[in-house]
Amino acid sequence: MLKKEYIWLALIFGLVLGIRLYFAFQTPYFSEDAYFNIRQVEHIRETGLPLFKDDLSYSGRNFLFQPFFQYILAFFNLFMPLNLVCKLLPNIFASCLIFIVYLIAKEITKSQGAALFSSFISGFIPIFFAETVNSVSVFSLVIPLMFFLIYFLIKINKDEKYINHFVVSIIIIALMHASAFLLIMAFLLYVLFIKIEHLKQNRAELELIIFSTILVTWLNFIIYKNAFLAHGQFVIWQNIPKELLGQYFSQLSILNALFYIGIIPLVSGVYLIYKYIFKKKNRKIYLLMGFALSGLFLLWFKLIPLKTGLIFFGVIFVLLFSKFYSDSILFIDKTKFSKYKMVFIAVIFLVFIFNSVIPTLSYTNRVIKETASKNEIDSFLWLKNNSDEKDVILASLDEGYLVNAVAERKNVIDKNFLLIKDAEQRLEDVKKIYTTPYETEAIPLLNKYNIKYILLSKRSMNYYNIADLNYRTDEKCFELAYDKEVKIYKSLCRMEEK
Image 1 (cartoon, rainbow, N blue to C red):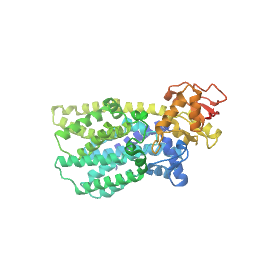
Image 2 (cartoon, rainbow, N blue to C red; image 1 turned 180 degrees about the vertical axis):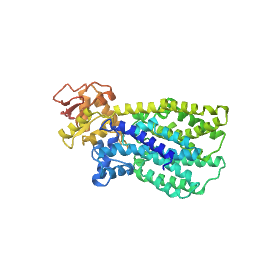
Image 3 (spheres, rainbow, N blue to C red; image 1 turned 90 degrees about the vertical axis):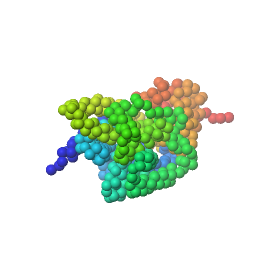
Image 4 (tube, one colour; image 1 turned 60 degrees about the vertical axis):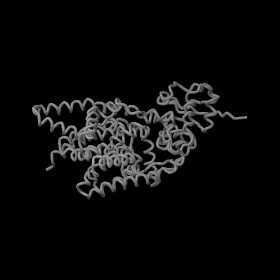
């Protein structure tokens, strides 16, 4: 007979996955950023190799990234439709976080109730839920694996059989995403806390941390060597143009954290960090604190994107909440208010529903509505069927991946700036083409990038705050080739220099 806790975990998993899939299948399409991974999966399935050299992005460039996640999706694509793979698998991966949070919380608290409550909360972290539900995001797998690594590190102190699990997991994470550096920083802070508090350092644990540091540093140097040579220290900011840095690497604020993480995990997490820095000692809590403080450091100095940092924070603070919750229940049991314990639990649960579950559903609904519409996809399909394979299509920054994946044509710009030497200039030129009122300024720029078609969607009009191309009145130079919800202009003129 199954234990009651397993039944509860299965129910929580089913609920979280069901809600995720409900949102994911609201649209047959994906968030714009998903189409980079979709193209990679298609290329791996067809050739067995990732698309490192791409003739379409920026009209021709090289990519640098770790392709392990795309290989996993490509494997399942061998016997499942790609659309189903990209909708289903990332949401299954992300939903598995509840099992990992349960295991870690139970190790920290020794309380089944606190562990179950925390696993339920982990299923509704607003930022993690919304950002992984329809984006084919590598974080849907990276985050659960990273916290599995924490669990293995905790268990190593009791049983060295977990060493092999740890080694395999850190290799996979290092092959999957550069955010493995956050792990390394967290582990080093954990070692520092152990030294400061004069706690005994497990030798196997220390050796694994050293191994992880060397592995992740070496592997990322090998993969991103050319990026380091091309951009120097600016590779940390992924060569993102200065105009966009504020959007990607925003300053952390309390309001952001409250909305994206939830008030209960945030407040309880901050309290626990204060308590175990100044009053108590607990090596398991120090491990979580290492993650929290390394994330805070990286966010404060804008070394990782805000949303990435908040995803890590969200899970860490849920785990810290489990300790806060179990300590609170133990405290109440020792007082005259023990008969009101269920009232306390009910209040915490209701606050969580209103401050985490409802914001999660609201935020996710907004993300789904911002997904490319059928009319937008139809316009890209029109380009695929009515333009030449060598034509360059101008679209807004957010639509660059769609030009490559759906229209299967060359774009001028997209969100992957690594190894792009003229990223700043391209961003400025694209903005000018969309916003200038002068034909004499637009045509030389169109010629510069050999642009044949200009796509004008509601998304690009909102992005550049325009209603139309102001210089398109000369039909000899700008033919309106497609006119529905999206407009597509064909560029016909050239301006020769004397």
